[in-house]
Image (cartoon, rainbow, N blue to C red):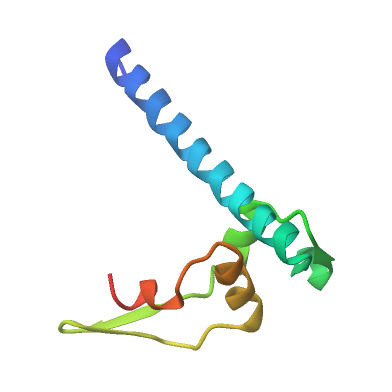
Length: 98
């Protein structure tokens, strides 16, 4: 990071990452508000204000095995993981079919 241009680009990458992080939170919270539901949060307590960090900690155990062109989950999704995917309107198959 000796050149100012590289520092500027790194700052831009970090800014884009924060925008995506915030978009995930907003998407989850809007879904929960619209459906008037709650999602499993810290210490398995229900919350209607999930954070992106909370969501990422729930997906640490996801492993995808690849054999040739075929992909599959090593273990099936846990119910809490499916809750978060539904709140973000993401199909669980995105982990298998890129």
